[in-house]
Amino acid sequence: MSEDLFSKEDRESLIQWIENRGGNRQQAEFAARQMMKRAAIMAEKEGVAPIEAMGRLLTKVAEAERVFSENSGMDFTENMGNLPKNRP
Image (cartoon, rainbow, N blue to C red; front, side):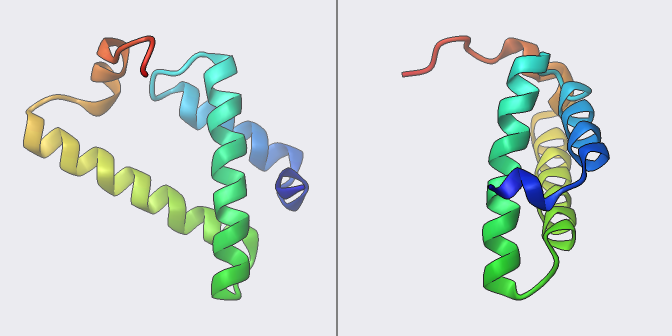
């Protein structure tokens, strides 16, 4: 399981990081599990430690937030509450 590749503290830190961006606890836990899976795949593919792959993934997310904010004139985290609740 990809979650086992990260310490309990790292998992909780990731969940809190996501919650700080506008998700509730349940959403943050789901997103964190997905990010850990993705980081595990990246780590295996790139031959790096899972925590290093997670760092790279978080850098990509932070960059996406920055680009969104620059192009929309809005703070990404402020806009999270405006996203549709039910997507097809």
